[in-house]
Length: 397
Image 1 (cartoon, helix red, strand yellow):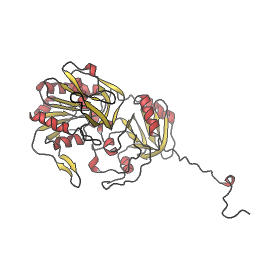
Image 2 (image 1 turned 180 degrees about the horizontal axis):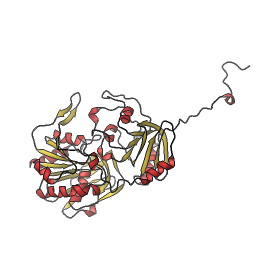
Image 3 (image 1 turned 180 degrees about the vertical axis):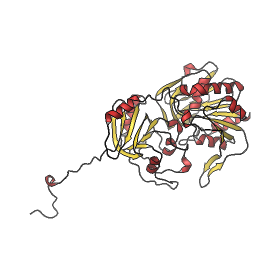
């Protein structure tokens, strides 16, 4: 007789050990590539452009950035969810992204500011998630596929019709030619903005009730743009993306900010560019950020192009051509200004040190400040905060 501590022979085990858990979520690219893993966030199916973000912090700010409308975000940093979420770090009222892909499973929050578990928050906002994926391999696939379309699906039963999901991904038209700004813009009437800068234990300061009046055209603005304008001393009013130049002028602004936002600038240009050109004609000080920078470039006579994979992260070096200064910046864009299309009186003043793409322009004889990067960060470095002060100084001059 075998000793009591002797294990049963493997042949007598009722069920062999399977180290591979059931896949409860998949990402299917338009070319048929499949990534399997564990579902998190909301159950369901979402289709969009697959991109990647290299930031090591700020996943809540990234997912609530309206510029991600129509996109599925791959986080290259493996530990997502470990600081939870809180109401102060929202960059919009709700997420605009379609879904997200992670390397590691979502862990419970471990941060004194956490108010909710990330997984529960994503589920409540309808964000479909997938974890347990080799995000390095997926990032390489995105780079090769030039921002491919894909479908992310989460089903606890593990049943997926991969052929149907691939067909959905292949049928989605992509962001080129798509205007998404109005879908994420401020609805209704112009509204005043009430928050200033954040500080520990105090939260957000109140925005000033006096000072230069800045109207922000909301193509999908992040809240931290508005907070930084208030921090710099501005009284801020936010208006919808399709607001006319006449309606903006009626608010008696001292300057106008053209915000960030999602989609193809050439598509948004149909209603945005006539407004911007009318504002340029009045001599109004203008500040373009990201999509706003691209729309301003179109209004000045330039063109925009779809990038192969875009810039999305918090470590992007930008060089000022006049001073040689290099700032580390946050970026989130899939389109760029074509430098060869700009007229002679519009000059490129800053470029990306990653690929030489346009990061800022200036227009001769006009009060225009225009940058591709996100000077408000959130998440990311604060090297470019001074641009808000520079714009306010331009307005006051």
